[in-house]
Image (cartoon, rainbow, N blue to C red; front, side, top):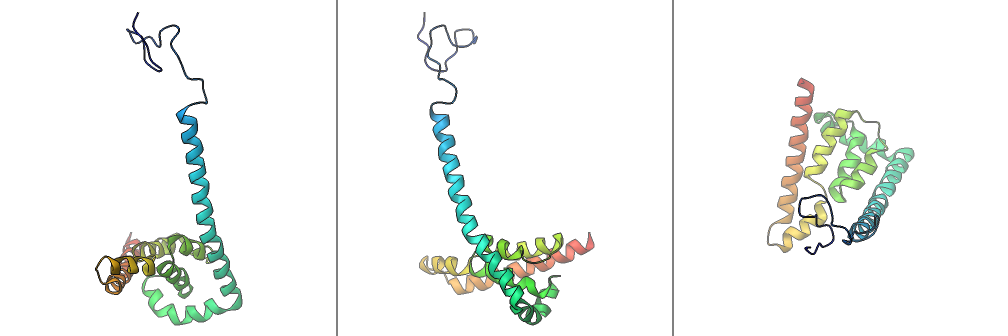
Length: 169
């Protein structure tokens, strides 16, 4: 009789030989992996909540105080080229300065259509987190400011093209 290790099948592939060690369900490395994955998922969830909820409430507060209306008037000409209302400048700037998740939180306070959300998302995805990434680029020997400007221009251009294409189709 040949020695069968944990999980090995018998000679003809009929399963483990009688007397072979078989792990009990719910134990071993899979259970530990699930615990680690669950813990990592909860940590990530908490990190996202810490960004999105405050951004949402700040955007909501700014809207209630009338600040967004004032900002929207100034931003309306630029934002209208992208098919966006002026108040969409708030999540755009939040995304540029902070990150994508904060921009998503700020978007929640606005009544945007699916097309407007898509256009705004394109601009934010290309030009997000500019301050932190600009510093990293500077340390890597690149011009962080120039690269940030390039990302803003590219993001706005891509968003404008997407808006035009969605209007055609």
